[in-house]
Length: 388
Image (cartoon, rainbow, N blue to C red):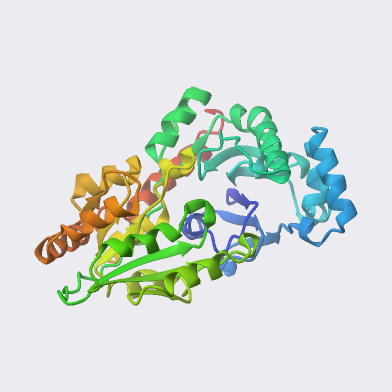
């Protein structure tokens, strides 16, 4: 009896997406023949058959980029994908086109699946809430028009879907009129870690993630204006060339604080153990869009595995878990001052208790439990071929 084959496809970096990497790991037991399409080869490339999806748009001449813009403006979105990605080359590379299950990460792979002529049951894993259309310039507006097209013609017709948080799931259930299971962005369980003791003379705070002007990362530096000097903030920031000199702006802002340091990023698989030496995991994220307002990101659960107290802005999804498991403090509003006051009013003994609560919650909020939900869903989809 042949192995069932599964294709994971992402129009993004397979190597840097923790969610995609986890699913590759979960499905690489040998039970299935696993194929992966994405921007770069996964770390565990021996466990799958990999094909590169190349974002060739970046190498195009200015004339061709303008041509793509004209095509997008005219609504010819299918045609633009032949310029944006190596569709023809990839189509010839694939040994066959039929799969028992195709897992599409986000919305762009849905059109790529059609253009490649792939066939099979499709599970869409929605990483965020897509129905927001504000744009600050022409380029953003064209991209949003393309997303509208993909949502109307592909996404809304999908019968099988998962997502990252309960609010997003409820919103998509209204659109699809089907249940949308939630698979949390939780990392592996780190059984070897325990809460570190707290030094009252130096309360250590960490934030790690992308340096993104849309997320207003500078607000976490501003927060330090409202804390005494024995609080120390370390920022492990990943820079993105699309954001220009934003990282330099943050470095300049941090330079005026003796207790704020911007450190070089470290590999993702080291971040949880590295962060264990800190006391507080910080995330202040203004609700500039629904995806930010209802964010429930990797770093939130990584802070828990690091056994940290958590200090956050009042984003509902994160707040729910902080309050349910008594993990730390939630600001009254989205200002740096409000969150700083919450941190300042927390005693050393309370910090210790919050860290111990993270230690307990780490046993529940981890990838092992999410893996069981995901594998059950995949097995059900493959075994019941005509159910969906």
